[in-house]
Length: 120
Image (cartoon, rainbow, N blue to C red; front, side):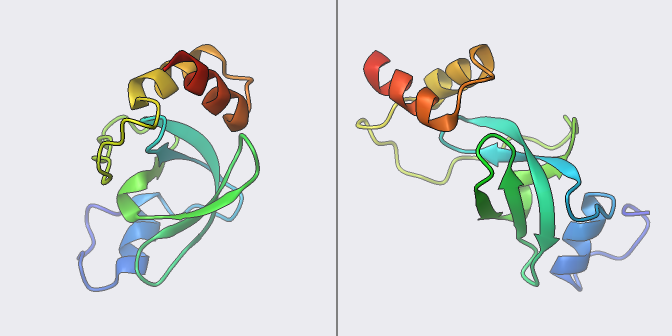
């Protein structure tokens, strides 16, 4: 249905249909720029500007993310968004964060950051 409808008139409607009309609490994937990877999250709502409110499954915190940072669970067709931040040498690299997140899936975000700080 998303491919067949006219796009561009209503950002909120477009964003909602792109995810196949999820209900509040449905599992989606959201891009976490610090880790440089997609993480599971709960869909909460679509805002009028097309951004999404989600709740991260790892720590239950909520975030408002742009349209290109949320995708259907397992949708590999959506490319990773380009991180829109200036490289900061004081922060751990995204590849290190991604490696730690994938190798230690049960760790909290705080544990991943702490380990990355010690390893950089």
